[in-house]
Image (cartoon, rainbow over all chains, first blue to last red; front, side, top):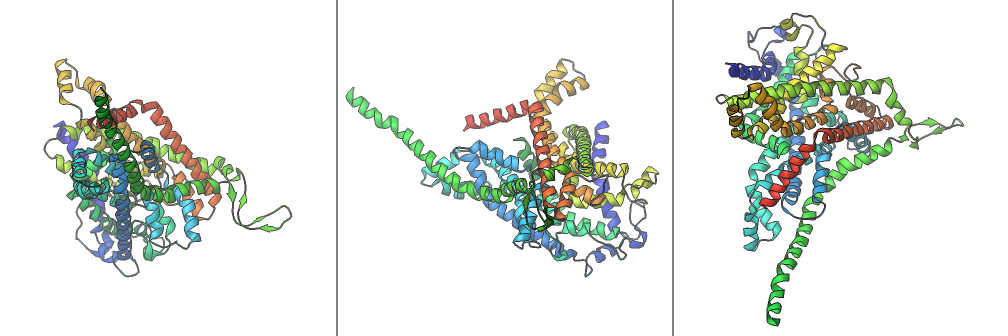
Length: 268
Length: 322
């Protein structure tokens, strides 16, 4: 009984605020302040408003996809190799490098944006994708390396030895044997890195002032209504739902893997 | 005898030399595989760190020299930028940051442990529970800021449910409270998830032994569960501390930028940087960096003794296994 109450309590705690956002997004602008738990009547008015011309929300979703996608891809490309080296090869300074990479993930983003803003202004990178992608790697890359290092460590060593006895060079053993085996771990890490970059805010809000280049998280925070001091809550809720849906779908489909990835990064 | 040693020698030195060769080969490969990552981190983390440190000792923009001539460009200004560290605005931001960190991390630990205990016992509906617990984590912080701003509207659902007419998202104590509620909602489930993972590696026999010895549920929790889950909990708390100390987007979206009652250190640095006050921004950034490093150091020193020994033990295990 107590257990069931607890379970229901947790589910309500997690879902009710989110539910309220979803419900509000389906109300008409006229009855946005309604407190009924189910919208009456249902309306797609807010969703239409989101995609109206001049709002630029579709464009900002595309920008988010580009920034998060490219960051994830580049991060995986170089992070997988680094993780393999840290997990499986013997060389000097290994622990130092590992500690350094963990420490890097704790740097405050606010400290990084000051010199980077100055640098990007000087080289004309303000309002470009690379001005968001490069700084985003400061947290995506340590996360990727750390996660994949723990993943590579769990694979049996005999596999590489067998491959090398069969005449593979160490790099070939990595590419032909270990990489395919690590695919699930790489995939999980990709999801985590993508979600982290998709949610990024401080870099995007600093480096970009052209609405055409803003990412979705920044764009919806700056929606304005018809009148200047009027906050268009319906539109914001609809946009919020749209920004969150890709992530919720990813989470629901791959929840087991995501939980493994999250806890492996922290606990192993 | 002679033939024996002659036969032995190549056998004895062969593997050693080969191992050394392999090690050298591995070093080269390791360097090649690590360098892209290290180069990127050098560019996006170490360069900004060093540049910010340097910047924090310089003034930029136009200034007048002693004779009244306009001086352009950067000039060394010593600790002048750090003078702002004792200003009311900085101290307020530091206070807000610390308040948010202490309160949210405490709440998250209590809620997270409670959630983990419930989930550890749940057999049916565990998948649903785990999916729902991931939702707050998946919602982007900026979106959750908007969501809570809507909930905390003057005529929003929070006031209706509570029967109050509080202006949550204006300045003041209630704005702080709104930020704390929103942050706790988003991150407590994450702590719960990490603690749950820690709970699941506690062997069942320990609990059976406790039951046989007649331990009460309360004793079992304080004497067995909590000590055994402590390493996992400490890691979760360390992660959350580091995150909470650099909080930026939630107060920015929920209450607004440059709001005195919720301005955090990251918010202050962002504001100064976007106003092109690079010197003070860098000085504040350095101060925040030192603050975070100090907290991490103290945390690991005071509480992390068994955290580190645990990590070391596991490293040894994997090394032995290899």
